[in-house]
Length: 350
Image (cartoon, rainbow, N blue to C red; front, top):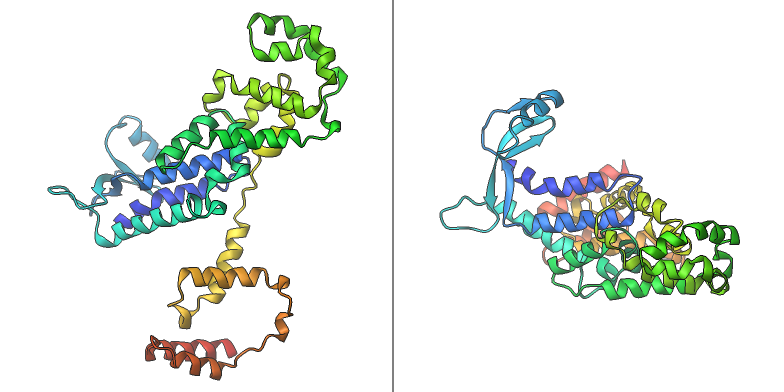
C-alpha cells in the first residue's frame, strides 16, 4: 500500500491542481508535462516501511521541515513520514518496487501517452491541439514548455505549428477588432522611449507612423504584433499569463484580444464526475471483463444517443432472462460470473 501511495501521489497532485478555477490552459499543459516527467523517472519516493511519523498536523510538519530541509519525506493526510526511493525496474543491488506497484507505473505511462501524447491519433495529442498551441505560444514560458515536452515524449517541436495557428487566428479578426483611435494616440507619447530601445514594436506604433498603423487591417496588425511579441526575451521566463498580459495590453492591443480568446481554460470536475457515473452504470458486477475500449464505446454511445437516427426506445432490448442465456453461452463466461449477474439483476429489479 505504501508503494501504491508513492506511485499515485503525482497523479493525485495533478488532479487536485487542475481543479483551480483561475488557471490558464498553459498551466494544465505544464501539469501534464510534470506528470509525464514524474512517471518517466527511474525511481519513486515512497514512505518508509513501519516507520513512525516524524510530525503530525500542519504546525508540527512546518516546524519540522524548516530546520530539516534535506532528507526524503512523505506527507499523507497531515502525517509526515520518512521516505525512501525505490527503482521502478529491477536494479542489481538496489531495492525496487513490488510487482503490483511497478505495474501501476507502466499502466499510468501507457494511459498518459495514449490519451494526451498519442502519435497515431492527433485528437489525443496536446502537441497537435491548436487551442493548446495558441495558449502556450502566447504565454510567458510557453515556447520553452512546448520544447521540453516534445523532447520528453520524443516528438517534433510544435513551435512552427503554434505560430502558424496564432497567425491563422489573427487573420480571422473582424474589422471591428481594430483598436480605437484614442488607444493608438494614447500610446504615441511613449513611442520615443520605445524607439530608443530599438524594438520592432516601436516602428509599428510610432507616432510618426500612426496613420499607416490605423490604415492596417486588424489581421495585419495582430500578425505584426505577434512577430514583435515573439522577439521579447521575457517570454521565455515563466509568468502567470493573466498578469503578464495586463502589462502587454498597451504594447500589443490587437494581439491582446487574440490572447484573451486563447489563454482561458474551464477547470471543473463536473465532466469527469458525469463520466464516472456513466461508466459505473455500464461496468457492473456481471460485466467486469469488459475491455477498456469497449467501456469507452458504451459511454460514448450513451452520451450521444440523441444523435442516433432511430429513437433509442425503438431499439429492441433483451430481458434479464435472455441476457443471462447469452452470457452463459459466451466461451469465457464462468459460472461465478453468471451467479453474480443473477444477483445483480435481481437487485436491480428490486
